[in-house]
Image 1: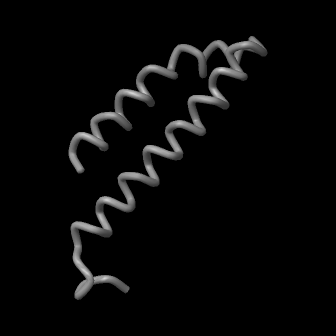
Image 2: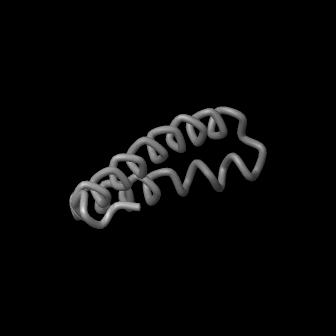
Length: 61
């Protein structure tokens, strides 16, 4: 679970420069940001699932 969280932090840090470029109007950077955000979304979902699995069935709800 912690390794997924670390991966998520790394992905966010790696996209920072492109976010700044996209905010400045760079369309290519915007495309890269959109792809990175999809990857971040998938990683976050993986972390969410790992947290739920860690809780166990008796605590879900």
